[in-house]
Length: 178
Image 1 (cartoon, rainbow, N blue to C red):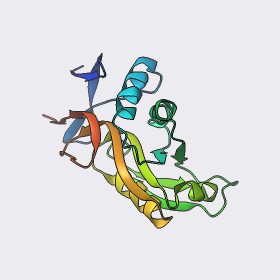
Image 2 (cartoon, rainbow, N blue to C red):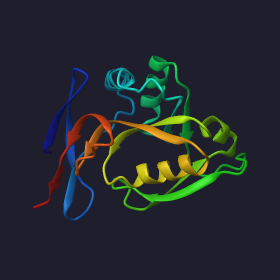
Image 3 (tube, one colour):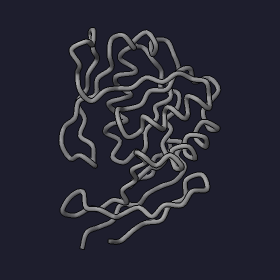
């Protein structure tokens, strides 16, 4: 299997190159369970977090451990945008998104209990990889709808097109399938 080597805060990883469609492959970055990479990335991104940010917002699953490290290092709380609506949620705010890695529609859900933690605050969106920008766009819509202001976007990597609005530790190219 072909790989693409990356550095994350002094930690080296060889990422497998995997197809996500008939024409495109990606260097698959999955830090779930990789404590060394998560800690290195979280510490490096916490150091780049603007001082005026009040709260971190992250989509559920892969970036959750990253948000936890950034929160611990910065002292800023974090909120998780879930991918399913739960019965206990009160007046949830929802958006649908199609991610390059899933290829199908997903739901993003902010529990109504968390709205007051975002409203009137400067927010940093935390994600593992920003690629097509679909998840980022939906997160921004939810944050702004409830009265928050996106003041920063932090990611371990951007992928594909350059994304100057994202503070990232590196960039991953897209690979054309032969």
